[in-house]
Amino acid sequence: MQKNKKTSVIANEKIDKVKLSDADEIILDLQSQLKKYINKGYGPFLAAIYDSNGRLIAHAANSVVNKSCSHNHAEMNAIKLEEKKLGTHDLSKYNLSIYVTSEPCMMCLGSIMWSGIRAIYYGVPSERVAKITGFDEGFKPEWFDEFKKRGITVYGQIETDAGEQVLQNYVTQGHTVYKPKRNYFARATRTIHKFLRRTICIRSEKI
Image 1 (cartoon, rainbow, N blue to C red):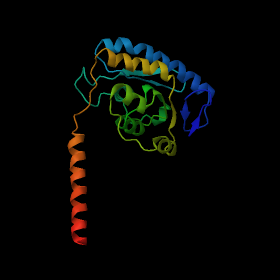
Image 2: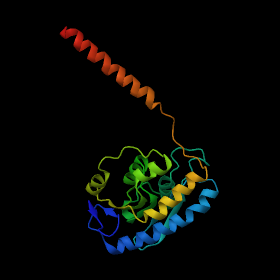
Image 3: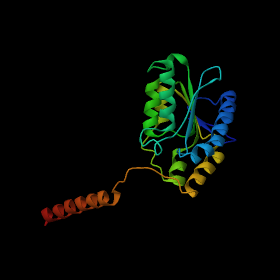
Image 4: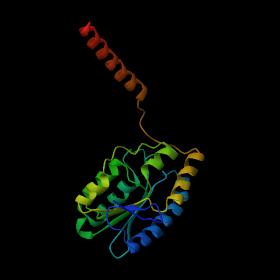
């Protein structure tokens, strides 16, 4: 993994100043657009797909809550729009890049990989998204390296200050932080009980 010494930006290739400059501009623009989408009931995430000539091809916001669909993340919506426009499930021959205001969750990473998109540029990293909002971004071990193996370029943590401010405003204004309810306490309690039973049994056998 490569890291820019002057900023927090990270990448799975040697950082290209031109690519980063373009990504800075695009992601800042996406962050600035988010306010109007949030006011219309959309979630605090926005994605845009560009071709290799720098032309905007598809653009979509997160619509989980206002469309009542758990997989309507911004990345998923943008990819669906592009595939419908081109009439194909395989975008690999079009050399496309996706720009996202925050790091893709585990579901969206799978969708990006399967779509054939060649590069990802994102803003706020998942750990900051989770800390600010409470959104559960899922389990994504070593995904930078895994995407590099598949020929997918990744640049992350771009213009994070602007992105974090948007997320903080979303929470402060009382918008919905959606995630399924999970009984972590009950699960942890069951694990502890199992451990205690095993410990008691082992000690009893020794006695």
